[in-house]
Amino acid sequence: MCMAQNIHDISKLDVDWIGFIFWNDSPRVVKQMASRGGFYPDYSSFVKSPDDLGGIPELAKKVNKPQRVGVFIDEMPQTILTRVFNYYLDYVQLHGEEEPVMIENLHRTLADIRPVKVIKTIFVGGEDDFAQCKPYEDVVDYFLFHPLSEQKGGTGKRFDWSILKAYDGKVPFLLSGGIGPDDVDAIKAISHPMFAGVDINSRFETEVGVKDVEKVKAFTEALKG
Image (spheres, rainbow, N blue to C red):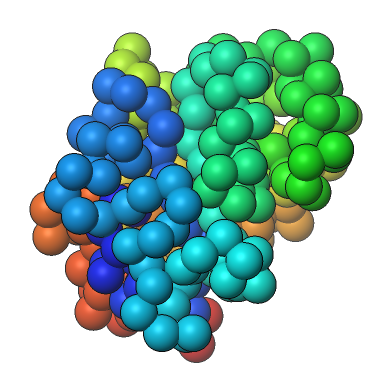
């Protein structure tokens, strides 16, 4: 998410996490949207009332829900640490080719800044792709299963969820890629014990980086109701 009022409105809904993209090639990258009056590292643009999502850093630290996820692709660890500190991130989503040893070191360093959990994206096209999870099982808190694609970032497409039965790992997972308002029944039908939630994005936007509040509200109510 990029725009302060949109973040404020979505945060009033029953959503658990909101995502901020820190990959420079994304049209939703945080720093590119700042010039549109939306989002700043110190949260100053959010200060409207005590009920706002963030505000000054002292206020931002008091906000527990929704929690903030920072999305990075093959970023330098020091840059990730800086973003965690400046944006009060609760989760770091690593969406590139980050190695387990890098994540282990990142975890260790983050422990001295603030308690942050790590999500590792695994690109999935078939059952054999779940083998990629094994080296990461002891260093991440969640996997995010994303459709296999040659491009980085989102694809707007789903993979075949029936292959989830082949995942036998011990780490909870999220589903990503092309999830839309009409997928509620398919999501509810997933019975995998490690299934933790879904990541929604482009099919809930009115424009790039701006979520349709009513559409997100209807979706979350249908999914959780």
